[in-house]
Image (tube, rainbow, N blue to C red; front, side, top):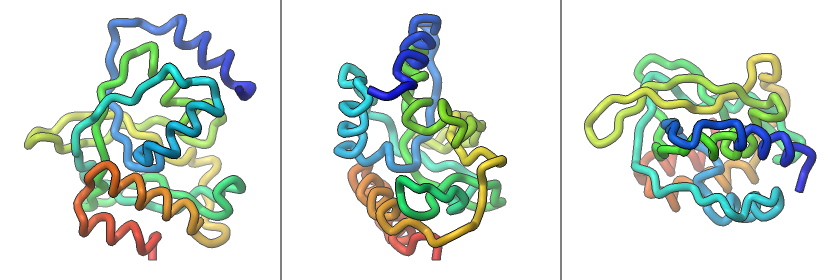
Length: 174
């Protein structure tokens, strides 16, 4: 358990149990094995990410803009890009579980911020929340993390994202 566990659990206690959030996930949280390992390391073994639906965020693109010591290189966030598209899964998260998602995504530590994205799912456009690099922490220093790209690809394959998109991810921002 890390130092943020108590903070997350307190936020869970204060959350509205009837509230729901639409969460667009496009990164390593889609790698279920890695996510399960993270949950165990942080004492969230009780939390289960719902199934989710295949989704496409529009007018955004991946940008490798966060130098991560843990990943050993830059990792991806989202940036505005007219005509761009990023595939992922759309999850409906219960209000009391949102702080766990925030912790996983790096919001609790200030690495990421929440932002609204337009998402196409089942032929309809909805607004969802995604996590992107905190602008104060964004940088292009160093190479893209190969280990991060591998996890991103594993997650995309496990999530059933389109094969041509998975091939794009394998190039790691190149």
